[in-house]
Length: 416
Image (cartoon, rainbow, N blue to C red; front, top):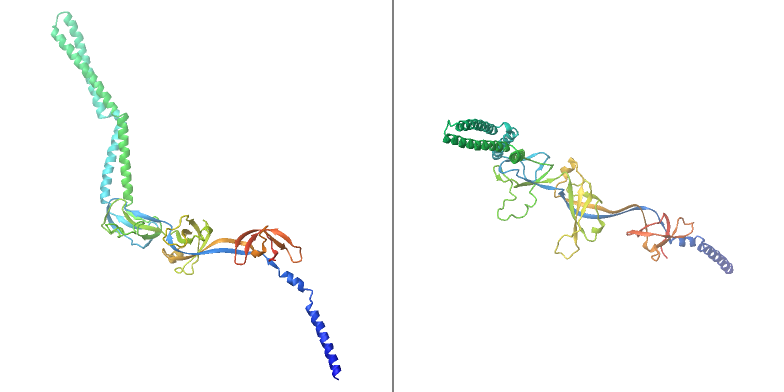
């Protein structure tokens, strides 16, 4: 009985060992180990981004100045107030300028009358008087010359004495001098309407007209208007502490006397905005003009703005810090809608996301898959196709590996 049990137990063990041997020997085991060395690769989007923090600023800020010397009639705005293009911001009292304008108009009319007289100078009173004087001198000289001729005949006949003849000769000479003087006076009178005299009159009219037009243009600016939609701000350059006066930033009040060109206030353009941010020297070379920017902010939560990099500074910000250098970067934002402008305000902080690299069809493989000696990888299009060596070039580095070019979808050997 015991012997039979031992034999039965031995037979069972033999069968179990045989089954275990069959189970351990699996023909597919070798291919699985081989497949573990190959990695499937296919195109996937690869995007690199830089996150920054900046402040919303106006694209441009201009200075509005007094158009002419005078008193402020009314200041219609306050700092921080939003205004529309063409809105009247300030009115000037034009009384003093109007006096100057009337004087300039009077001078212009006089100069125009002088030029008109020059154009009709040949019939002017001065030339007419000179002509009459010349005709009178000619008639007088002619009569005296005839008397002298008659007296010479009478003297030869002994009818008149010599002293009477000598008096006529002297009178004739004097009248010839008067005749020459009359001719000279006529020539001078005629010359006064030509050449330099006419040129001087023309220039005086031009100067008078220019002065009048300039004053008239100044008078047209008695109402200071907003050239574009914006925010009234302190004038650029007036934010520093004043030296001595202390009124640089004081608002202009009605009745204040101002001089032409005196700063009134600034106007920040809100039709176009920009964002100024600081970028570390580690990231600055990844930025260039035209890169897309996504803008978000706590002050306008839910509003997602888009823009682009407009200026990448080549000069670091001066700092006493021993840390890495910081570079200013300016980002432009396209014109916002009126609804967006109600939420986005000057001075708000903004979070920026700048796409520094984007490849929708990037192939990324482990760096150890690349043979650094000849920059090749072991590649097969499918697992049942032969292996070939493909030369590649590298691109961006990622956490998963390195981007390569020159490789098609398939399988690469992940390493030795």
